[in-house]
Image (cartoon, rainbow, N blue to C red; front, side, top):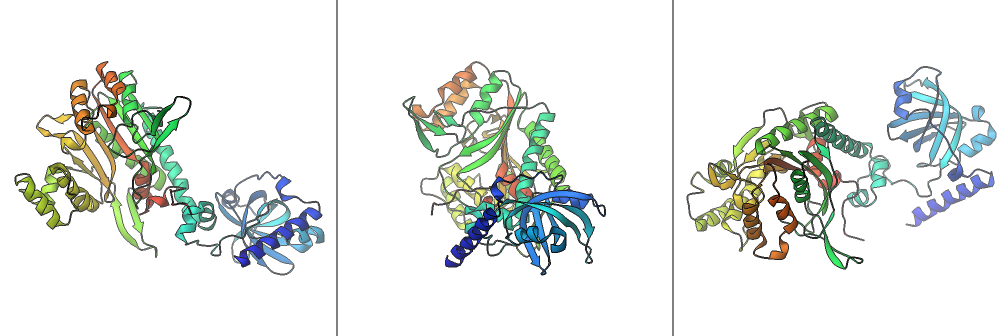
Length: 482
């Protein structure tokens, strides 16, 4: 801490010295003509350029100095000479530190080692960094610092910045894909009187003016279905959901979801949508359908093949593959005993369908690396889906699993208001206050048959960008306060 404090004092002294010369970095302005990457890309010997960015390296050679300037696009080397700048400007230049921002004008040339650089003719100090950069400027590794002070992570690790720039492009391409197919993007309430659309613990808040409690939404679903009732036939929303539950490598209390609904569609039309969209995004952002995941040393540990068509398998069939061909014929007691032997964690209060689901989630889902549509799940799991006509113990749904986790559930939406009320009442355990009566009234006005799907954007980004922890694709993940 003392070292850091002394460095801060040194930098403050340099700032004071600059101000004594009539230079205030925080009042200066500078307009770059191009990015660092464009300056390199459009190289022509002697071409004049003006770039701006943060100083990430410097090499002092006495009467000359090389510095690296980095902006969002990348870095470029700048060559400064005392005899070109003059004594006064050279004196100012020597007050620069790592992490300061600078505007640099000059001409392009190539060094003896073949590196494209800018021969500096003039410069402007645009911000003085009063704190030194991370000790490991090139490769900040302390995960606590990386997550708590993401700006340092972005400064120190260009590959981390690239992940988040690609995340932005992924979301842009999702929007492009859906809008090109006639879907309308909307926004629905984040604060809701009754949190519905999923079984999850909500965050609770209080509205003082209205004098009542609200909940942060746990799903987008029920308001988007109201829009189907209102005649918006293709609708989607990308937004945050909030669940007051545990944290893990796959879970964050606030996370980004896409939900899309299509009138006169069903779970099969949603399969086509999900497969087409994910492939579109991968090809546009990454240029490939073969996604490599690498370890810290850069060795490929697994490759995910998104090439269509994706595998389709019924829930009961894939459970039988793991738990035995007779799984659904034996007694509930025998299922519980076998699940424990197989290694699934079974709670004392688990209902029979939850025992089977525990086997699926713990022992099957993690093995599904390449895209797999697991269809026709038990009706108890998804009360908002239509029953399968050939097996009324299941519903017309799929879970799209990639990279060992669920990426997108989807189903043929339940639009029978009487059936829907009965199943929501069962889910609510008889607690009337948990029913979203306004949604049920909307259904009674008539909702067209429809397909709907939800996609976890964070998990999609993890899969596409080769990240194994959800915190590595969320800019500012939730952490316990210091």
